[in-house]
Length: 257
Ligand code: ZN
Ligand code: FE
Image (cartoon, rainbow, N blue to C red; front, side, top):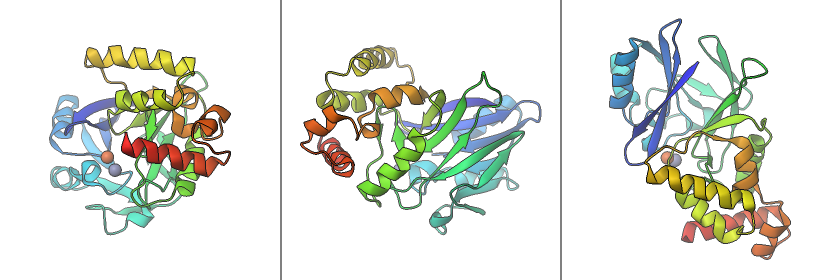
C-alpha cells in the first residue's frame, strides 16, 4: 500500500492509499475533491473507499463530489458521527476492522477534538515494515487537536490509545501545524534535547517548504507535550501533579499561544 500525501485548502493533508496491483484507491479525510480526482487520474485507479475521521468540513468537504465520480465508493466514519458525514454508509466503533485491498485497519475511538472522532491504524504488513496511523485532528506532529466537543480526560484516554501503538508507526495527521506546535512545545519543555533538535530540523524543512508529515510515533512520545502529561518537568511547569490537570493546563496555554 502506497500512501500519497495531497496538500489541500490552506494547511490540510489528504491521504490517498493506493493498491497498485488492484488499481484501487482509498482516501482519508478528503478536504476537497479536486486533488484526489487528479491523483486518481494519474494513477488510473478507481476510488473504492472514503475513510473519514470526523465530521469537520475540512475533512469531509470532498465526499459528495467524489461520490458523484465514484458512486460505488463506500464512505466510512464513526458511529457517533451519524448524520454529520455526507454519504456515510458504514458506522464504526472502537475495535472494528476495515479492509482496503489486502490491508486491514483497526478502528480506534478517540473522542476529544469532537465527540465522534475515530482513527485508523494499519499494523505493519511484516516485521521490518512500519504501521500507519491516520489520526485526523486528534494527534498532530508536535501537538494535538483543540477540544471542541470533548473533555481533557476523554482526550487523554484517546491520546493514550495512540501512545500505546508501536514506536515505529508513521503518524499521518491531517494538518501541517508542526512548526507552530513545536514553538509552543519549547515554551513548556525547553530542556528537552530531543525537542530542541526536532525544532531545528522542522524549521529547516519548512524553510524549504517540505512537509513534516508523517512523523514517527517515537518522536511524538519524546517531544510532543500532549503525550507527556506524566512527565515531572511538564507537571512542574504547570504547577500540578495530576495528569488530567497537567494536560488540561497545557491545552489551555496552547489555545492562548
Ligand atoms: Zn477538525
Ligand atoms: Fe481539521
